[in-house]
Image (cartoon, rainbow, N blue to C red; front, side):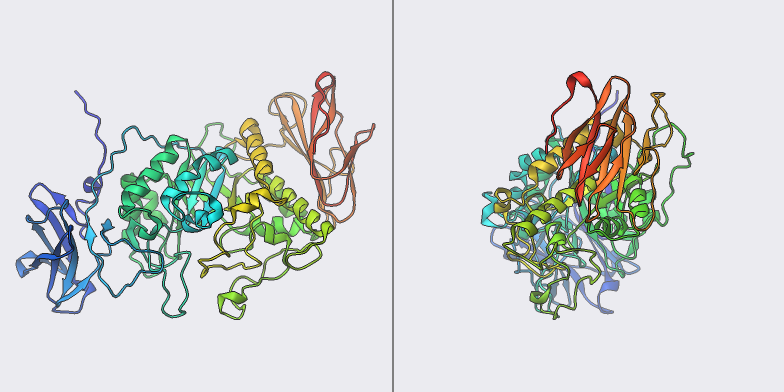
Length: 601
């Protein structure tokens, strides 16, 4: 007779030497003396949870030492009524591997000189929680900062800047079409930078990696609030991905343990591991992480499946690759640079068989999508570094005037360019990702490195949903198109061969003449046609500052071309020539004459 057994964090970390582990005999505390001065006297301070008073101390003896490791089971420690900190020569230290803390810290209150009282977190009752396991082919990724997402009063949530506040926006994200949410660092970290006197708002520093951030919790129990948030999103079929940043000198051996901990303890669906010393080979070998998504900036050390490119057997993709090349190529193309069309065509089609590519046009460390079309140059003066910080290479265009303007033509062009950008993003074969606020035209006033701002620069202004810059409905419609069409769900790149036997290749390119295109350096327009079950979808793209004429192939018998959507005026002549005004994209579909739809914009 078999029994369904769930892994607990105790099961996973029983052999890991520096985690507090509860046993029937008591709780085992373990300290690496190599982290303290030689010949130090080490021990554990145990506190009463009710009033925070010191209950007793346990000082380690030589009989409790093996090598540099002191370890002892303290039978009098009750996880329900006690908290603890470590002792070194009568000074108290925070357990850097603690699962939680009794102290409730507001943002800006973190003081590394004060020992936090740590506690043991019980296993969360997940009940019938089920991971959504969204495939990369079905993903729409939304990157956000937990505090900045709902901190502004305009967010309308009750619990601003918290995990609960994020949960309150679950239906909003679902309606937008989001399948997966990526969180900037949401584990405990020190947001106060002593060197600069400014905030480390993003949190890309060494953290207390085993506990959710207290300042992002409405309650004193950040662990339960975080788990409830994950559970709520899972019930609606949405994933939670966590960014995990590790400095270069952080022990490589511990990184996989940290990821396994969050995967088991909090049912996390994936991790975006950041840092220059990530042990991808060890992560790749982890059996616990075998069905967890891993986002990375490089794939060094990863063993890819040994499959033939044309093998029809599907491959379950585990890794998602983040690279800025897509962002810069598309930005240059959208603003009208020459010599990039061939690269853009390659980026739009790119869909490796063995791993996924994450496509994005902006992120936390660049201009927002709206600012890409409002600023030529970064404006980071209010960071306090004389505008020296942040990337100088942005590939953006202000559409005729730097920053905010009242000129109707400039603002209309900016809105149009945002829509062009979004169409290209969602047209691409990889995973589309947007940064929080892109759907409402959010601006950071030209700041492309807002790492130190806990203010209106980084707090999302939800009033943007009611302004002309809002792209919410537009993005929602694009996400719906991706869900409904199978050519967005291929595990590998589309082929330029007629695989369906319908008389048209799966993918083809067109220019001034049908079935012929030029990728010359001066070209900024192209027609991309996809065949799906005998229906043809033609994406007419013109990013030039002058109008362009492209040729449509002859529609299938009994069908004719119909404009479904466009970002500006488009005309189709009787000889199947399509004329696009400057900087315009249109979707044209072959339809039977009886059900021809009217052109919609």
